[in-house]
Every structure is written in structure tokens, then in C-alpha cells.
Image 1 (cartoon, rainbow, N blue to C red):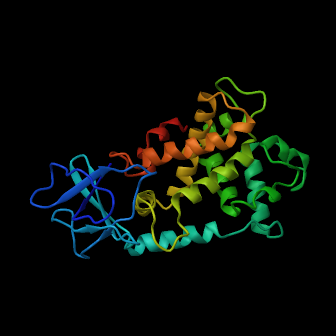
Image 2 (cartoon, one colour):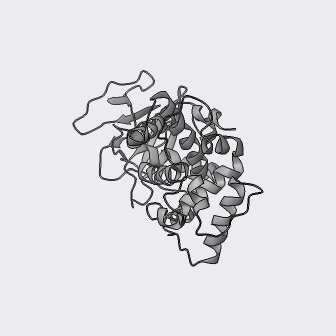
Image 3 (cartoon, rainbow, N blue to C red):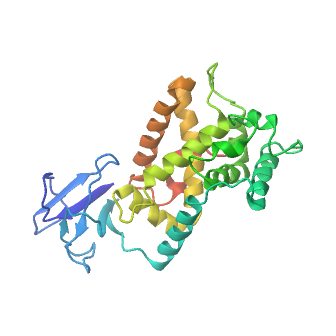
Length: 281
């Protein structure tokens, strides 16, 4: 993905793309790690004209060069984006409460989706350890990411049951003697995605967030789909690195890097367009 900015002021000087004419233009292939903060100088700038870009504290609009065509992505959200981001933020702030009947029902639903036909003896049971929770009470493991991490696991189990079961049972590839705990890994993946997208910030601080908000406008379940992609990417990274439990954080970092790379690709407009989406089944 190529980001175009014109009449830039700042420390980075970038070479002009051939598609921009008649102006002092600068462009660069922007990765997730180097994505800067760019602000449109004019509110009515459009990609078909010659917008003026300046590095400022907030980001208004960014032009992305995808397949020789400019696509304008703005942080001035549409009403649909605002509503969906509001709902997603509400989900992210929803802490798991073991006393709430709906949260208890969600745990039971996760068990039923994970182990069809096997009865759960109690919400506090040693049975949960088989799924990869740290103890017999899974509610204690949700503190880092909240109720949305349970929703993500349940979405994964119901939407991509084959992949879910394969990762749960650690099928495929040469496995370590000390494997990552499946359920706890899922909670960590939710938290990693929340950090990567930076959706709680009042103003966007990365291109990744802007790209994701465009995807959210296409599909309200974009976060949950991205979670599923992240889980299979993490498992693939785990196998590729012949990792063990003590290397889980390193694998999680490389997983984030792979996700950021794919989200910024020219042909990726939806979560389903990400190359690693093909790993799901």
C-alpha cells in the first residue's frame, strides 16, 4: 500500500510517485511500524485532485494508492462507522462478570460449541483445564481482555469450527512438548488486537486503525473475523518457529507483525481479503 502526501513538513523526505504531477509530492511505502500521523490541509481535498498533506497531531484523511488508483480513507467517520465503532468500544469495555446470567450462559455456550455432547458439570470445574484455562474457574482468566475475549472464542468456535477444533486439539505440524494453552492464548490474542487497532484512543495514531475502520463499515463482525485470522496465524507462526511455551510472547509479536503487514496490502479491503484468511476452515 502506498500513502501519498503532498507539501509535507517534517523530518522525513520521501520520493515523489510518478502518478502525481505539478506539485512538490512525497510518497512512501508505509509499514505498520513506520506509519506516521498525517493530516489533510484542506477539508475538501479529494484523491482525484491535489490534496495538501501536513504532519500534525491528528489525522484527517489519507490517500492510499491501491492498484494505481487512489482511495481516500478519512478519520472523519461516517455515521455508520461511528455507530459500529461505538458498539465495538462498548464490547471492549465490558468486563466479565461471573454473577451475570448472560455471561454464565456465554460460558456454557462456549463449552457446548467446543465439546458437543459432553456435559459440563459446573461453571467452576476441572473440565475447563482441558480447554486451556489456567484453573477450574475460567472467569479469572478474562481480566486482561474482558467479556469480548469470550465472545471472540465463541465466534471462532461457531464460525470456523474445523479450524477451532484443529487448534484446540493441536492437530497438524510438529508440536512442542510444552504447548500453548488454547483458551488463554485466545484471551491474549484479543488483547493484542485491541492494542494493535488502538480503538480506545480519541484520535487515530496509525494507518492500521483507519484501514480497520473501513473494514468495520463493510462488516460489523470485522473484529471477530480478524481474531479468527490472528489465531490461525499465531498457530502457524508457532509451528514455523518450533516454539515452546516460554516463547509464546515472541510468537504473539510476530503474529501482530504479520497481521499489520497483511492489513496494509494493496488488495486487502476486507478481512476476507487477507492472505491468511485462507487458513480458516
